[in-house]
Length: 180
Ligand code: FE
Image (cartoon, rainbow, N blue to C red; front, side, top):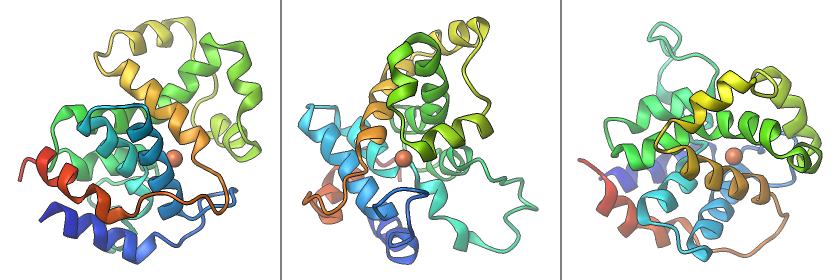
């Protein structure tokens, strides 16, 4: 079952710190999914919100990860894992969630100043603000708006000690969306 597998990744690395923030990886993922639920997002987008950073939790995938072409871009690691298990409605917003930050910095002047310090720092490493050409290309992706919604939840899912639904609450959604 895909849920069991995902549960295992959270068991392994869910308590890791979410870089530069006051929440763990698991708290961050659960808060992000909760925000998606609260907004009435589709099951696929709720699952995407839950697993958007799964690329950070896959480090036990094997020591030959680098040999298999998995680099440190966590959105690509996540996508590579998800694409054989979920439809594009789940995978594409995950793949695009970092690009969505670069996009929002380009089109919403207020957005960048609201980012946390850690997120502003990583922005530079992720390629900085999108150019007008990159903005056009991003907008052309049919999942761009889902990725932008996911990005807003991602940015807000950093509240220390917030009570949210547990991972088990997403088991049915995960199995319903899963391809396998
Ligand atoms: Fe995140």
